[in-house]
Image 1 (cartoon, protein in one colour):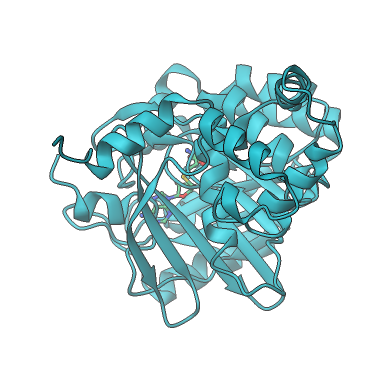
Image 2: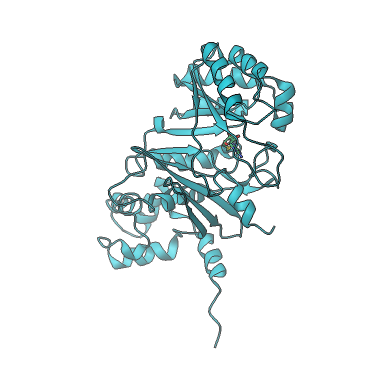
Length: 359
Ligand code: SAH
């Protein structure tokens, strides 16, 4: 008698089938047509996946049994396994997912008043090499597929009670979304589709280290998403040190691309600035930053550093943070100091994976 296959082999076998979540609509249409199923099954299937939060094809009770079986034989639905699920006192929940090939990614659900926001990964690891970030310490392993990006969204959605909906998405998990733009855009097509998750593009943010060519591509895309640029330094000398990829690009080129994005979409830009004690939190940095951003219709999001074990960086004192804030306010900058969420659960992207990985 043969032994049953290990879970891992089952997952691999499933992952070889097309992922239903990332499947372009036309392909689902053709698939149904080839098997003589009527097209009205499409909204029913989507409703089960995105609205009713079905866990398996068996759950899709208004579909004929044969169709459910056919779907199960042709497509995979869940290709990831939840390795760890952490919950913080403030309601933030974080999942560490293992992909079918062993790669690991993280995604987070944040609860703030009426908002239910999720932070989603776009790659396994990251190639950008920001020196303070846990995600990129070992480089990038691979891009995520649209199905794997959507799977994170649905796993987080299923943590909510039935009467709560996801309201916001930020592509701020592991990876550089603009280095995997096709998959990110395909996944977001489903996220904003009224028959998908139905989240307005105004509530979807793509966060980037600043890759000008990809920003220009995004500006031409039919849907104007909210763009956030991770600046972290007001001059190239400092930014080259903190965000190594900057050495090949430069702040000026990034700001020009950001401005073109604003002109093309009319969407106000967001700049992000992680405050690192004694490095980019000086009054001089604040003054330079105020001068740099003055000409842009933008919002500056200052994020206190979330310490990463093994890295030498620290969160600034509240004194330093206040001085930094006042200089920017006096400089007329629209600035927000983001509250840290998820204290007590390795909340900064890449931390949980790093603490649990043996590779
Ligand atoms: N690669 C993209 C998106 C992922 S990072 C980007 O660079 O924008 C999302 C944001 O989290 C970035 O602004 C990043 O600099 C910030 N970040 C990374 N590690 C952090 C940490 N330990 N503490 C606070 N913010 C961090």
